[in-house]
Length: 423
Image (tube, rainbow, N blue to C red; front, top):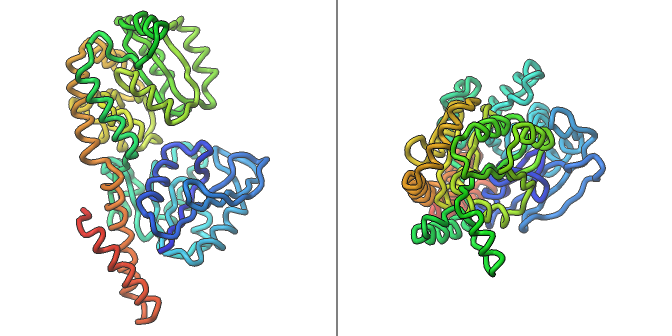
């Protein structure tokens, strides 16, 4: 079976959460022929073909970028050329160039649209983009969403409910194993040192001693409008519990603006860590007491970073968005959910967790248990492989009894045996 994935960007460029999902699919479909078709992250780069973790990646040149969208005629050409022998084509929505490829019939194979979020960032062009989106969804053989919340709150998807399937995202095995080890050590840790990254040597011990009374509040994500980092800074400024430091991990177009805001609010215990490696990100999660996801728009549809923090037994403060976000970390179970954009509620939630270590431990233990049960790569892979198999079986029922159909039936029989416990 050949699987082709389409999106605007992929690792090692800044692909974000969607790139993580693409990588998870690649990992879960090991043994299949696979390829990614994406764009270069810069107009200065020519089209190129390489691989990332043994998966072929074709990176198309772009003419220019408009509304965070690489415009690339080459992308259309490569979709037509490279998907001609594909069994499954997965379009990671939204990327308007991929919608255009669907409109022009430039793909082959069963079309799976993985709906990651709405298209609020294209709001000014919504009157032009909406018809294109609806056409894509009509052509789709299946629509995947990460949470039931994305279905319940999307007026667009409600028209296509019969095509929709819920496949929650996952965290990597590395996060699960390292997070479990960290959580086990955390349970035995002296409460006075909770929230501190392990350090060695006399100098390191002195630094740890200086920070011993400081709790660490962590944000991880791109510094863009819908993440609500301005709300987070205002809320942090209102906290009465002064023994806290705030670390923002990530980069983006609002970085300088947010730094100016922090300075104007006279926030001294705030650090902008910038974009970091996965190893450094895990270290930041280990060192924190809880994660805050202050997103203000449904453009935040799931937020895998919640799972990453939960895998380390960390509570999460998120927002009551009409998306999958509050379904991942559940209010009163694994953390606290507040009204989007509310400085008062966010400050109050941070105060509550900062003041109550027992509550942090309770939420963190629940978070770790839920992630290990529901959000593993194995669980996610079984779910989407089941969907792919059903799509191909449905197509084969309409095919004449040919060698191609026999080949597909043999392939599906093997997959069916392998995934017989799919839910």
